[in-house]
Amino acid sequence: MKKSIAVLSLSLAATLGLAACSPTNIKAPAESQSASASASASATASASASATASASASSESKASASASGSASASEKSSSDTKGTDSSSSDNAAVGIGKQRYNVFKKGAEQAKKDPNTKKSTNADGAVYTDTKEGASIVEAKNGDYILIKDDGGWIRVSPDGSLSSVSESGDWSVIKTNGDTIAVDENGEATITNVVTGEYSQDYKSLELPKPPAPVDGYSTAPKEGVKPTSAKTHE
Image (cartoon, rainbow, N blue to C red; front, top):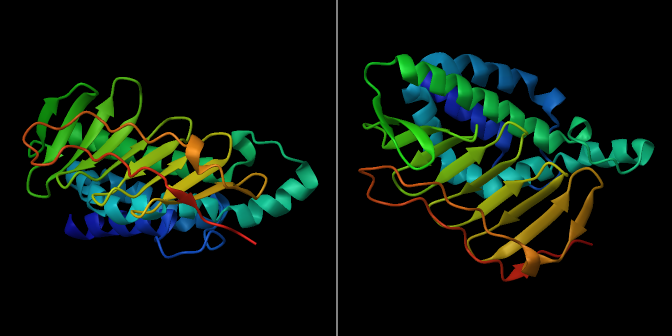
């Protein structure tokens, strides 16, 4: 069980990337199938596996947009031949989000069957909590899956592949279905990229903060709000 939990957590981190990674280091979904397959298999390790995955929400949230944004390397070359179609079929970032969605969905299904899981509800939907790990997976009424940590870090994934996350430090990231990926560090510096066109934006003032999920009863810290963007990273 512990081995499976570790594999799931590492697979998630490997797929989404690390905060220090440059936006060109992450592979498109087709290039990360082994990690995805490992994570999907590991997701059957139950709620504990899924909840433990949320323990890495902090590091993942620092880089999920960086990870998806790094898919822009392959997206840029494909857009040169396909044009600037931003449909999800050409969007490596959305592919990553959909892979994460499937992993969390399987974890929630196993959580329902695990007698050791604390089952409750919140304003978003059904909540499955690993009290030892201080982490929960929420099966939302709108179809989303949300991983929430007791320290306030969280990740939300939707069926369409969109993803948003905030760490306990307030840095946050977003994947949108049109190819836009946004990563804002804890100092407020934003990296805004479209992975379909490979273009960067400096328009940090128009960014909307991710909406935190509903709190989980018994947690000492409510889901965090992201920091307000104050600048945009420049790219030559």
